[in-house]
Image (cartoon, one colour):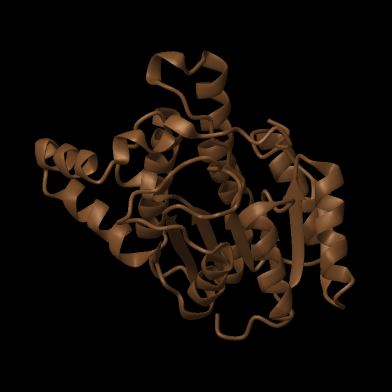
Length: 271
């Protein structure tokens, strides 16, 4: 999809962090940006930032865990704004604690938002894209989707599943005209993982570099994006060797088992 000007791009979780930057990045390309989030106040502020720069933004309050709401939102957007050309499934939540400390609510909510939210949005937009034989779906996964992280079992589980779903649907729809991309970032400095101390091998990533990579992936049709490339690819390689002992040894050697001991939850996030 080389020419992005005028394309309708729907981004979930767009009120803050990575989603907000994604919206700005696509707006700068001349896209008609549709922004959704559960946080109405922050969402309106994010949309205002785009429109004040002379770009087009349409904010809609949406809880992606609600399947019916996802389908209604897509129907409304396509009726009022136009066919959705690009979906960026960005909405996600994170709670860090030991496995036994994670509540039933946390497990259910994490999977409902991080995994099923992406599934519902894909099911809602894909029929239209298939009918037009054109479209692109971007799913936010994570480095935690290729290697489990201590004290983030629910989050890792959701992101492993996102990669699996994206791979499966991409294979099913090969040749359909619709493209699929998994984004696998490491430690992105958006506030979601405040208080953590990433290992030296996986330094902080500037969020703007990830959003630029997402736009580039849509333009060039990349199927996976790693940021930063080396540590995320190394994680996938070590996991693929099928040697848990080696994986665990390297993980502990770089201090990965302690990274989330000092995680601080952002009280401003409404979940």
